[in-house]
Length: 129
Image (tube, rainbow, N blue to C red; front, side):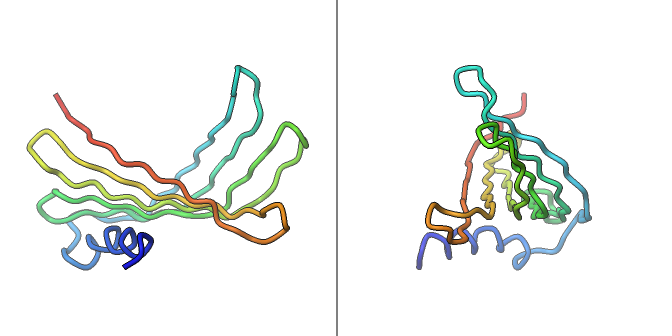
């Protein structure tokens, strides 16, 4: 099994293994800017429509969202429209602790002019006092 298949299976598990305790659509607008060495270089603004839910016992929560992404680069002073999306899951591992993960992707064009998807991911642990 490839790493992509494994990640997809992990994110699909909440949908397959349990019924939803809470679920619903939402809109998420998020802007991320880059300032290496204190100078602005680029910004991406996502305009996503998403869906979130969780298990009845509240131990697993998940979301999936996607839509257009507007990327502005300072070097060309140009804004491109791409497609981006995210999927995430959070699993309670103790009364005050959970483990979470997210995978994201955005469409792009490589130096040869071919369409590609740039992927990112994060994993973390959240402890509530």
